[in-house]
Image (cartoon, rainbow, N blue to C red; front, top):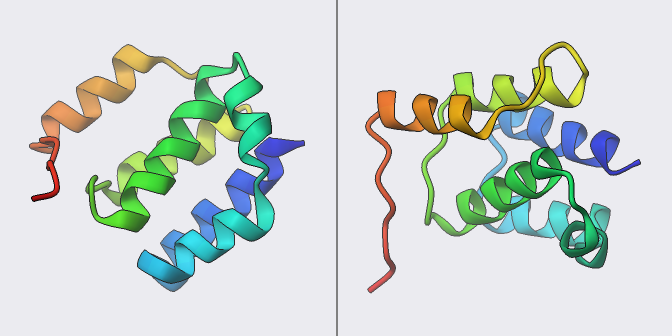
Length: 99
């Protein structure tokens, strides 16, 4: 299941500081993008695209946000886009557009 792959990659981000090229390589090796695009599970798509954008430097994500994704992927919390957006606003999130 895609949840397991996403959890493993997020754990690598938290425990090993995985980012940039290494994170992109982990995504390519472990996650089938076709399954992500075909998924109607907002948790799957949001966590995947957060990882993808984080790997390219387009998005900054705090440890609390990564832990939120893990809690949801583990089934300990129900995913809420509104709650996720509140976290990003609280943390001073702003989209960075590459120049």
